[in-house]
Length: 226
Image (cartoon, rainbow, N blue to C red; front, top):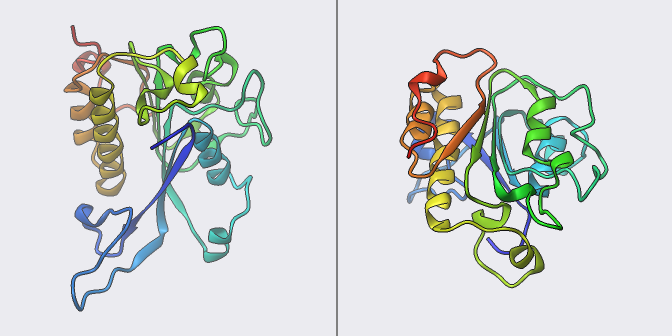
């Protein structure tokens, strides 16, 4: 990924098999891939996370909405609602961010730090977490990492100005594991793999907000390994 925001749409295919949860499906010879538009998941980074929220809340219109798309999960990767104040349509100032499906918010410690932060406190992952009500919700912060560390290195100004962490490849692997385990949890109804992904992460994580209906205690998680 290059500079700043991006989004991802995933669909759980009609087979119900996690191995068929794909970005681009290429069926075997003679096979057919049938996406289930009633079980779509959406993910986005930065302002892509804002757009993911807006689409999940029905605030944005798209051609896909004409195809009876139904979202069943949202993974927000250090979402940002604006630069200094929320952009239209605002999310973090709403009082009706009610989502009838699971939500995972992954933020960063350094995202709100520096003179011109990539993720200002008023519009950062923490602000999203405060207003989000969901079927169940996790809010996790990657300590000692910044907003742009998820993306490929580039010379665009956010990559230069925003505070960065070390060993960015490790963060990218952990965030990918969290993304896939979250989707697996939504698909299977079991959060075991998600708890394992958080507990065994190779970076320091801060579980700021547990599930709204927790089936486990944060004392069982090694969320801030030494």
